[in-house]
Length: 310
Image: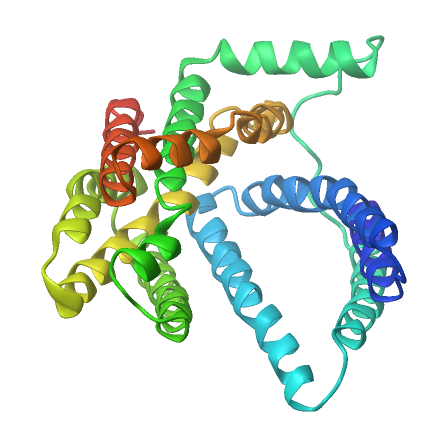
């Protein structure tokens, strides 16, 4: 994690001081190399640090992630309002992340369960771990839920374009819509954290997936702006609940193979779902494509989660 944070800090500094497109591209590449060791390892550390409440721990971590997603644009907007360059923001973040890397390097974390495999190369170890993970029925089902969630998310890659072109919202109104969704996300995660004290996460996951089978279609068909707001709020609320439960359950399905499970799910973006969704939107229209893809993804989550209660 400290290595990943250091790489991300370097990417911020490289990007903030770049004088060419090539330097910006290098900064993006360094960011990609650092985000894996930091973010994916942190996911595992979070659930393993709180073995009695992994779903609540991951919900709170997701709450912090969402808060950070809101603070980033706010920092850029604040810098612009003060007449400062975006470079100042990136360089400042780079310095802050260096301090974070130092803090992480000195922080004790729980030891990973199980013993490391010795005598195998990197590739053979990774392949062996992923095979062992997928041989576990609980892991396979949890991974299928996350794969279907990827399909569901792909449904909304053109949502803001649809709101602008098909619904007729102005660019400012679309930006306000996106900001409001993030606020609903935070509220949903805070409520989920409380619900998980007394309600089983598996039940909440299935309830959210069941709601998401129909809510996107109702969102597309809703009459007028207020109709879409009335449907959009519960849609965003249910949407926000799925990820922390599904992700945390995947990582505790086989704790000693959590790294291999992360490796499997990290391969999902290699499937060009966004391009497939764009092709479908051209074929049948953005609204219909969004409703159809979301319904398929949510139905898949509901089917894959059947019988996975632990």
